[in-house]
Image 1 (spheres, rainbow, N blue to C red):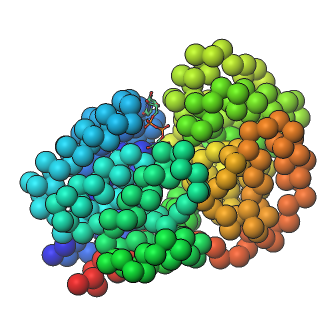
Image 2: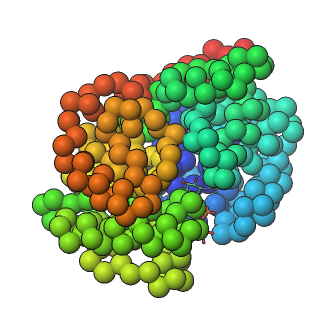
Image 3: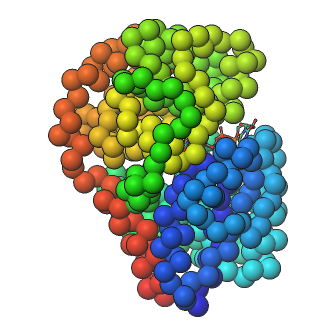
Amino acid sequence: MIKILTILGARPQFIKAGSVSREIAKFNEIEEVIVHTGQHYDPNMSDVFFEQMKIPKPHYFLGIGGKSHGAMTGQMIEKIEEVALKEKPDWIMVYGDTNSTLAGAIVSSKLHIKLAHIEAGLRSFNVKMPEEINRILTDRVSTILFCPTQTAIENLKHEGFENFDCKIIKSGDVMEDGAIFYKELAHQPQCRTEENFILCTIHRAENTDNVDRLTNIFASLREIAEETQVILPLHPRTKKILEKYGLKTEGLSIIDPVGYLEMVWLIDHCSLVMTDSGGLQKEAYFFEKPCITLRDETEWVELVECGGNLLAGAEQEKISNAYRDHKTVDKNIFRSNLYGRGRASETIIKELLNYS
Ligand code: UD1
Ligand code: UDP
């Protein structure tokens, strides 16, 4: 019998965990105990994903959200440690690069519990991003690093991980498992959509916490919206900052964050994705849509290399050029197998069962 303590806290982690939990449920010899840190807490940032992904209800809800990074991470470490001491899991499982990920990793290292990191090895090489630090530190204390891409494996090799006491596995990307599975269940959200529309999300700290970048991005979006509808499900973080600075959003179709089944419908039916999200860049590729990434760098470099992802940063001229160029992206580039074609969860669970 293997007992896994899964640490979840933020929206993309709920989506990734959906596919892995479905796989775990196939095995009687694995017990999963789920901890929700509370990092995301609005119903449309949290509950809706547990319902739609059919993730078992969290066994522990820590209620630690809306705090500074230090307070949030520190309190999560304290509470996850209490749970881990009580549950005595064989593994702690963490996803991605959020503060909840780092907190789970620190607890595993203090208590000498094996750590499985899903989405390991990614790097933006921008150490000002909180996510970059979370990734590097989590990877360093992981027992098994489940890498979504070959680039992630190469990043780890460059950092000397082959000399460390850990196992590096190329698992593919659990988000592709989800995209394939949930596509069949997707449905239109309750919002007006024109025949041609752009799907946009903005929430990364590097954009929301820099008023110049955010002002430029929204100016570009307003200009583009004169030609094509821009649907923007608004992250609560971005909403607060837009209100604080009174930034203009006229002409944009702003809606509340949507559940994943609605989101998959929007990705599947849009003509272009514009985003600073990590997950959405890949989903654009899965659904054969060009993507303009509103960041200066991306961890998903293979998307840029294949030509489907246009890295535009936050300058108006670059964004306009990318908008012009997306119209000539060749659809054939989306046919390559970059992320494992939906077998990642199966690979991960098999590996955990065989680990000795
Ligand atoms: C976090 C992750 C980011 C990930 C994102 C996914 C870190 C450092 N960042 O960013 O990598 O891309 O989740 O969405 O972990 N808020 C609400 N309700 C919620 C959630 C957030 O109002 O349900 C507001 C709060 O004011 C909060 C702010 O948004 O302080 C930021 O939330 P936080 O969890 O700190 O970071 P995210 O920007 O969501
Ligand atoms: N997403 C969603 N509803 C929304 C916005 C995003 O379901 O209103 C999904 C999106 O499709 C992707 C995931 O949330 O699967 C990505 O989360 P986010 O952009 O918050 O985080 P990141 O991937 O940047 O860490």
